[in-house]
Length: 135
Image (tube, rainbow, N blue to C red; front, top):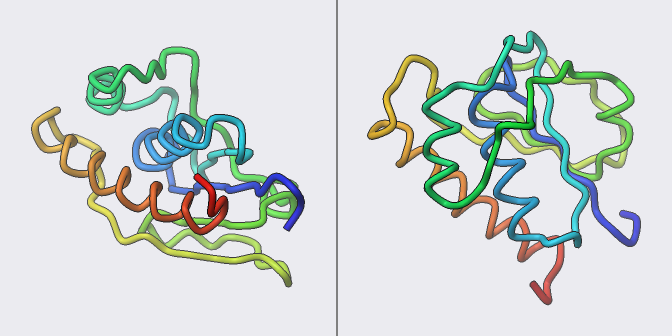
């Protein structure tokens, strides 16, 4: 890994789980980790319930948008985390790959998305502690 580890979160639409994970890790890492997210079939916009529950934590996703998964993004990452959606991600030697089995927030209201956000937050904090032990 480089001096600043890079993490890529991937889900199909890049409109929910991967966006929450990226925003939470970016927030908690405070510049100590480079964070990206992408999707194999990006949606047109971020899930409104996801934006709302992230806003409850003071994290504004209004300027974020779903991005396509690229080989370059995977090559640049030290850790690639798929979000339980079976993505066929390019595999490169020397990368760490994790698959987080998470409920999909698509079509769910804020009351159902909050526990997904909180689960992702716990996982992100644990990952940060591994990547930047002094965090």
